[in-house]
Figure 1 (cartoon, rainbow, N blue to C red):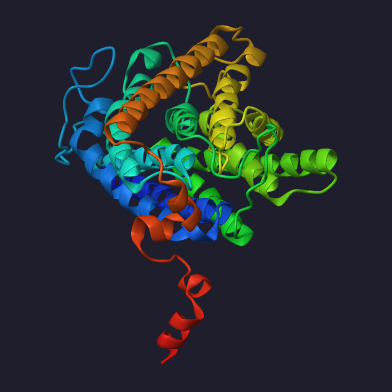
Figure 2: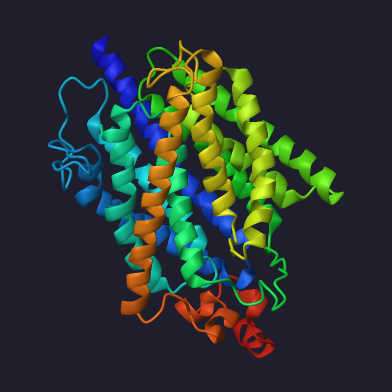
Length: 424
């Protein structure tokens, strides 16, 4: 029986890893659909390439920094160039666990790249993918998931509202500050212009792929299947996403007079991000409330960043940052005594302000670390590489052509002369 459960748990982890990796496809559709046609091929290609690069870096050092032994206040110090050797006393394959954690690291990096969209050089993606995967994500992940100092305080973050989403969002914020807004985003008088994405169907399909992938993201974080608890986690995940979408529809309709499709899509994602920290610690009614608040929060967060003249093309700062903060804090409010396997019950369940304080401390320190280190790394890159951003001419032409020499949509851009040549 023990061997059967070991196998089932391992299969569950691999399935979770596959679902999380599939989310990269969701991010390709989401980012490409939310931006302009002239950059679509670039977005798809850099997402695949940087995930591959991050996989190598995670194998070499990232996994060891997070989960390695002989750890200190900052990082772990063993298990570099991970061999796949099975650890004793673990009820699942540690190689499967490695793949699951690798997938998470890749998602955080992809979120960070949301702040680069439509204006960064390909070389900036390449270099930052390595640096983020070594110096940013593993440190925060070790603090919370690898037995680090925040774990010792009982920080609750079941599947990564802070570790994955907030860390990526703060790196994205550093990038948006240094890269500055896209051409045409803001006028001289301070007003902003909406730069429409080229395909809302792509964006919506991306959200659905991400929504399904999140069942592996959160459900897979149970690591085991023997008690069926993953079903409860998936339930909370789904209803929080639904509540986020509904709340975003309502608030956009009330404020704008029309139900805004991008806002609805962002609301669903915000609900998913928010419930990621608390999906295993709260009751279902609380999951609905957490998702609903996230849907409203993302609407006003987008407006706030716009007023601050922060150009966030795919709303990474609002969806993954603001909702990630709310989701992490929510466990300090709604975690129940029966479900709080980590830390203490929340404020509304007799736990007082203790757990909420831990959550607030964890959010603050993790966000500051991710932002400051990312900013320093990107600033150094900007000096050494003579800029992170493509030229004005290259940005206007589009990154498909300027960075890769071809079109993501050839038929939409080729001249009549070229069309005749291809036809003959």
